[in-house]
Length: 231
Image (cartoon, rainbow, N blue to C red; front, side, top):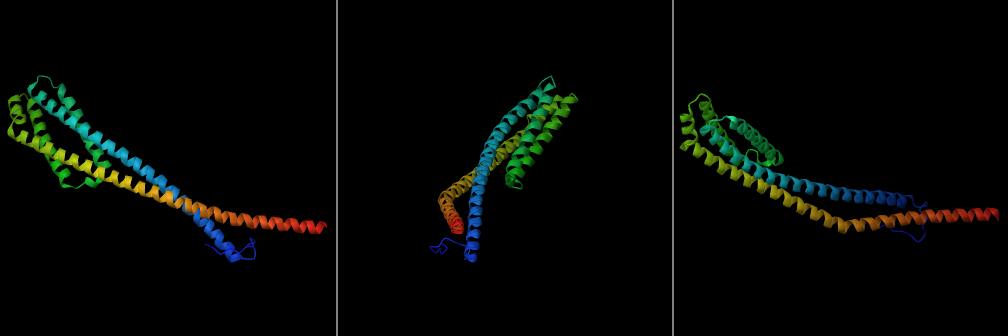
């Protein structure tokens, strides 16, 4: 702490006055920085919670779409109406959109073995489905039936479900890790702010009080001079 003599007049001590001004601005900046850090930590944690909830929601939505796609494929092959093909296309488009959003929310998973294997299994499975639909359009339902209910498609579908579950677990684990880190970081920032902010604020008030004493001393001295002049 600065050495302050009993005389509150700082005009004769320019170095001390400059030091006090610097300290005043410095502690004001520290208080503002801690406030900004707490604010930023709060919004980072809030964003992590929203992202975590959204990833869980997307995982459930993809699971639902996979079931509907499975049903649509079987109905298209064995049914008489092709209206299910439009439903299939809509479900497929929605699943791709959800999958892209899931990766966008957690880009760290890009390039992982789970995601790459999932994409390969998805491509192989949809290729068989597209081929079966083409056979349905040309009236060769027996070939389409053999494709959709054959061992190869069943294997590809099992592989897709297995890799989808692994990818889902991967997204959830990463999301949980990020959320825990944000929560831990926010707690540390809040604790540090609770400890340091009162200290910084008290020092700042102390420096303000020194300047107040200096101003008050000058005013009193000015009043005394005017009284002597009048006398």
